[in-house]
Length: 410
Image (cartoon, rainbow, N blue to C red; front, side, top):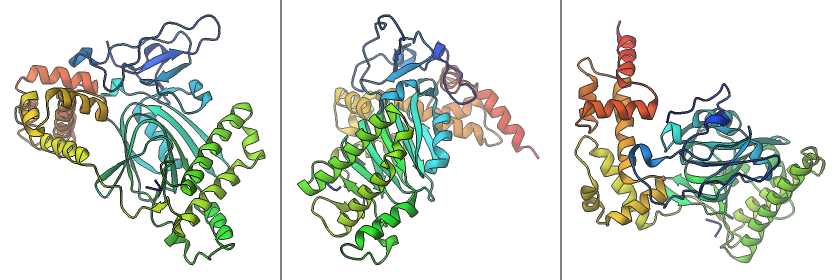
């Protein structure tokens, strides 16, 4: 239808050293010779596992300086992705900020559990990014360029007007304006930041053969959503885009210089222009989405549960209370949290409390102490709070409070 035992330190460019890859995702060595090492079985989003410090065991370490990130069977979308450095989340944000207008990327796993592999290539004036990584929330600035999203695996969701629309592999979403948000689980995604002037020229040239486009700004006002589940015309256009991506990978793998020599940038622009003009003409199976897809009842219940937890972080919360709030069994809660957030309910609750505590520590009131902030964040034991906080942020809460207090002094 056209609808993540000490944390590793990042290097200067944000890449994690190969001798200390992040806990959680499995690293498969890219051996130059000899048999490949026996890797651990991948831990999928629904696989059971102990909580607390044992929730993210050390993965198999690569024997070479270059390893391929593997997340429950997900790998980098392109064949040369195994050569890309493994990044932490801040480095991922820095690399995507300028070409894609990304304002913020927030890891949904502890900092020491997050890992990403990213390749950036320029396709003429367009920037193409291929990513595989652990769960993140991505916010684009209002001035972000037109962006084409091609999910390759895992969970990728697009938020619009408070609703989340799943983007399965094989679908495409063209976001013509910034200010959007993506919510990703363990996922794999190709994104292309487009030069709007080049695309506009192709649209106007194509539209001149049919019905004239009176106003380009109106044509690109709404996002374009298209998937292979639509009717044959829309399915054919989505399949053409998938074929273009496969061709780009193969040609780039032979020699990146051939990409422009074969004018793959022009082919991309013409394909997207066809999609836009066809959608504006009402081709069946294509839509200019004036609003995000409706959130399914299951998603509505889950989002309501998360909102209720966030509103009661200072209160005692255990699995029995969550079962009562959600009207779901403990097993169902475990499955949906691992599927949607990559963790158990209690791990997510602990991280939310620690994030709340960090905000309070960064902006303290005059009478605030570590103990009072811990209590206001739902912790009944200050020592346990300090240990969890140091493990999560590699920083003692007393240090953060002291720095913030010093800054606020006149």
